[in-house]
Image (cartoon, rainbow over all chains, first blue to last red; front, side, top):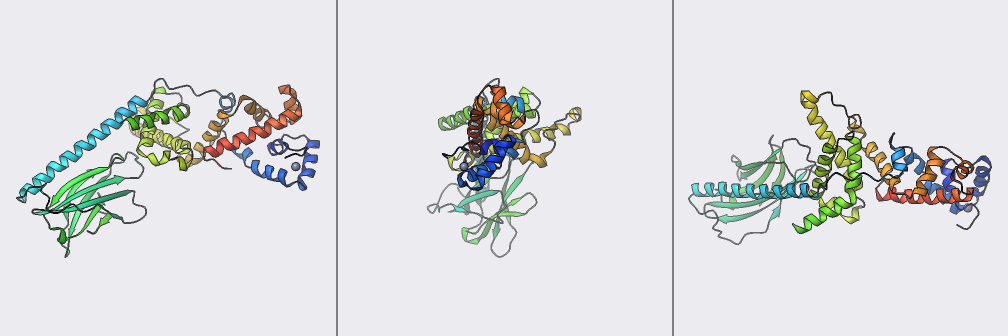
Length: 221
Length: 168
Ligand SMILES: [Zn+2]
């Protein structure tokens, strides 16, 4: 930009060039590609400037710094992160206890692992719209199959109560076994350990459904 | 825990003042509710570390949108309780225009970042509708200076808007 109109594109798009200046610039513009490019580059800005909310003009243009909050919210947020972690751990322990009861009923030690644990496998979502993901590891244990599942809710947390359910569907079309349910309240991973009294080979699929029974995620071992 | 706290502090230092300003505006100056909303917004950002991914550009649009949603949810919850049914928040009562509302706030946020000289020349040449000659007189500088300041002001504004994910 070495021509005499180097900066005219800006006042031009804002409508601030006087009539003579404007005429001269428009004549120049016809034959000057760099100035045309400048005009194009600025063209959208007046529209955006016009969208400044009413009442914001003085504050924004005076460059008033936003008043700092009365106190930093960092300690409060950290406290919530910690308590979220604690409740996550507590939930996991409760579920593990429940699993031990189930395994006890099956007359076997819940945690005795016969095979090396397999790698965790991801569930397949029913559609691209499903706002959650999950993975599970299935291990043969005396009396059944141990399932280590982790589910993560990835949708917007809008305060609505949601509940997810984990089901094991046996091969041959038998009644699905309800392995547990959990409320979806936070985006933290939800972990569940449960022993289903079914050999791994008899499990057709695991399903995560919502409270209405709609299947969201499926895993075929 | 150390890494979480560090991430949170960086997030806070960089964005809390702007979030606070927006929250104060949306709550009509209610410091308590503004603070709760900023807190909830930062917590949600911490839960979604991908929004802080450098490759995704500034998290400002996401943060402003989230803050606004937090306040809309809170406002709806209060409306259910009869004692606060008269509570009016016209800024928040049109969630359909969420994008437009957040965008216009991002424009204000971008303007705040410009130098005083750049803001001043935009005030004269755009918002007051002055010509270059009139602005030159009001600001006591030559017309050529008004033109070049306007030019650099628009460049700086365009950059600040791009950083906030706002494109014309
Ligand atoms: Zn030119």
